[in-house]
Amino acid sequence: MNLKPSITRALIFVIFLGLTAEIHCQTAFPRLEPDSKALDYYRLGQRSGYSWTELAEISLWASGNSAPSNIERIRAAVTAINNSANFPSGGRDRAEFILTYMHNNILRSYSLYQTKVDVLFTNGNYNCVSSAVLYMILCEALGVNTSGVITREHVFVMVHIDGQNIDVETTNRFGFDPGNKREFHDQFTGVTGFTYVPAQNYRDRQVITKIEVISLILNNRVADFERAGNYRDAVPLAVDRAALLFGPSLAVTSGVVSSGSLFADSRADLLDRLINYGAVFLRSNREDDSLRWAVLASSIYPANNRWQELIMAAVNNRTARLLRENKLQDARGFLDSNRTLLTDADYLQLDAVLIDTELLQRANRISSAEEGDAVILSIEQTRAAGRLSERRAGELQTYAIQKTAAALCTTTPRNWRDAIHYLETSISRFGGNVELEQALRTYRNNLATDYHNRFAAEWNRGNNAEAARILNEGLTEFPNDRQLLADRRIVDRQR
Image (cartoon, rainbow, N blue to C red; front, side, top):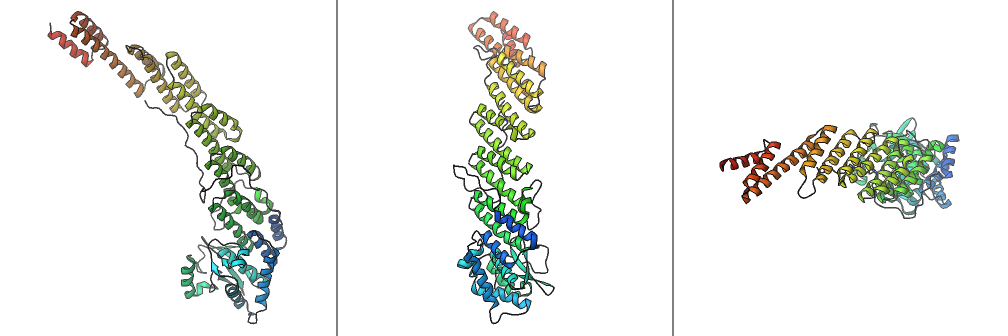
């Protein structure tokens, strides 16, 4: 019987953007407290909403560059548009003029990942988020009310003019009211690679606030870091985004899960980032750091099930590796030292793996009936304590009985009779199964073969009387053995 340890499969976390880099050897955990500005901006919105200058300031903070010169660039754009000789007075024409001005004077080239407002002014590169944020700010500064619209892979702006809601695709200079411009729709598809959702199709779109659109700058920066394998620096940005949208209540993450809406709950997204960072340590076999991170971060952002998955993965991965290295005692020490971090069910699962391995190792070393009985007793005690399943305990017990029987017949000549007796006693005591009964048949056949070999040796020497005595003894014990019955026919022909 080839019995192997029942080792739990090492748990691997699914990371949204994949683990592609390890962290530095000297662990310095990322910031978990929100930037004070994130909370200030949240409170500002709760008190009075946001002016266009506040939206501009927040967008640059979210971009990671709040230099006064950048604010002045936005102010200068507002002034330039407002002072334009042909700046329309009507809301619809004004909103379209602002879009055209942006593309003629600020925006230069579409860049899928360029989400920062400051960079947009530096080199003219933009994506849907950065262009939408700038357009909203300019519109709000010049008397046009806006909202954001998010789809599965895209964001754009909706302006509210004279009771009408008009879509504005800010990534294209012809993007004003695109659902009504066929020539733009064809060009847009070719330029950006997105499939535009016409204004009248609300199945795959969701209206979001201006501050939620700005928060996507942080969201995209998080994605940039994780795409590069930098899970550490993604964490503070996710913290700040959640604080910007939810304020102090962002810490209440228990039970918060992604709603499945197009605009995901930033608190659920934050938790994903925290778990991703902890999982990076698992990739580099640094389970202690993963556990320390789980303890620290879960004390601020509790979510029991999610953190328990990470903790279980860390403890499981380390114990499994130690077992593969044949370091059972080290594995036991690591498991027990982290017992308080595990749920009772998870601890019992890993405890069973270690007990299984220990019992299997002891069974493999059996060299006497006394040792075999001791192992079988331990198996029975472990099963009675509920630390091994009935099925696995039965497998180990069968294996230990087989190993003991084999140990009893290692002498020369082989002592098949002791092995047979041990198997018969064990079957009587614990009940039989296919494997034990097959082992018993094998040993009986071996003993019958011994009778045949002894008979043949004496018969070939001419000691016919001794040969006949051995044969009769064998047939008394194994009256239906075919080989011995064939030997009887040989003797009968010689009479």
